[in-house]
Length: 41
Image (tube, rainbow, N blue to C red; front, side):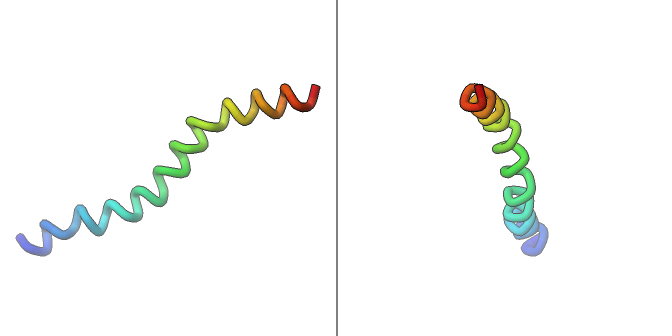
């Protein structure tokens, strides 16, 4: 049980590393694209 209790903590770090950048790109991507289009004109 002690090992099972530590697994979520160990899993959280890799998941944050992989999921957070994807979320960041999805959240910020459209804004960056519209900014790039605005500056290119």
